[in-house]
Image 1 (cartoon, rainbow, N blue to C red):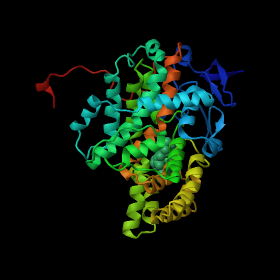
Image 2 (cartoon, rainbow, N blue to C red; image 1 turned 180 degrees about the vertical axis):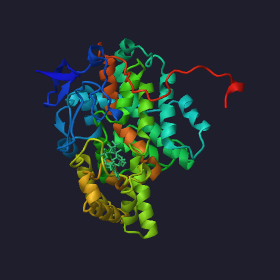
Image 3 (spheres, rainbow, N blue to C red; image 1 turned 120 degrees about the horizontal axis):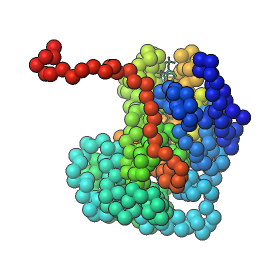
Image 4 (cartoon, protein in one colour; image 1 turned 90 degrees about the vertical axis):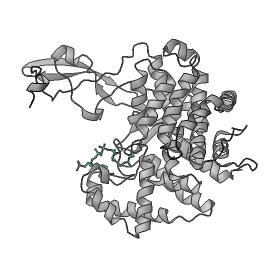
Length: 429
Ligand code: CMC
């Protein structure tokens, strides 16, 4: 099968590619060479930038699968570390593999004193995501033998590097929280991943924080929900940076920066701020709904809409359902949950949102659970980054392992000035 493109009177034929889920693409790699044209696709919304075997997403039907496993089944039966293994290595681990992976994560979680000293350069008020990306980038400087910018060498140590990345991003995330609170850092213990994260954040020097199972379970679910999401902005950034031959830590640091924006991972903070101001003002949310309809990016209804989901975001469904049961189990009644529900109801009755197929996304309810676990709002995007690390790592690995991979280098339509002659400064108007 092939696709014909007719430009003026001339026809050009291009091969058609089909993915394992039947999704179709025109292989346009020779388009410019053959025709002199490029496709214009601002934001790449209609462009396949790579072939990937990690995650399948069907936005029209609200389907999300990691390595073939539906997100609903992973949410019901798996936990974050197991799903991280699945995403990175392609298969669910057997008992031996799971144990070994867990051990490697536990051995890799400590952040060395030299790296801890970086915090001295940051004020307490420093934005958490800026601290996270800086220190993750510094991991490459701290472990130069694991971050050589030579794929062949870096891949030889991949298991260890990946474990360091996942485990230390978690520890650094907790340290960021403690730094911003002026608290001393805690050392990781021989605990499961999520219990350790809670310990690293909330233990006191002489009083260990012991998480109740409901809290660990909810945290596990939230991290799992964020573990990967196909070619989103931050994952594409990781791939793009990695495509230059850059090591894993550098590529992850770039992904963390991409995630920090309010239209991407930063939305979970913005949602909470929006719900809080509705609460503080005693508003019913209509001010935010009306403002969001004005078309300005800075007034969007946060936690609503998605670049690819056009029906529902399956992660939002799972998290929305978990929200009620987690709060109930923890005996918490949060007025922001009621506000969120009313806001969702009102938006879903409004023609502006209905006609544009804008539904709650993963960030709409996740913050309410994070808040119930005692995690402050400014840390929400850091939690998203901890959860997303396996997806970024799996995608970097695909780039690094592909001997035929090209450096990411899109083209543009130039809209600037045509050639003109240089003018000396005293002759300029
Ligand atoms: N509030 C109001 N209007 C919106 C919103 C929103 N949240 N989202 C999209 N629109 C409008 C948009 O302005 C456009 O209007 P028009 O047709 O009149 O020009 C229309 O809906 C279609 O937009 P789109 O093409 O579906 O949106 P996009 O692909 O450009 O952007 C998005 C996707 C997620 C950036 C956007 O929906 C948004 O800004 N949402 C709020 C921020 C947010 O919650 N982000 C988290 C996304 S999920 C977590 C993650 O993976 O990052």
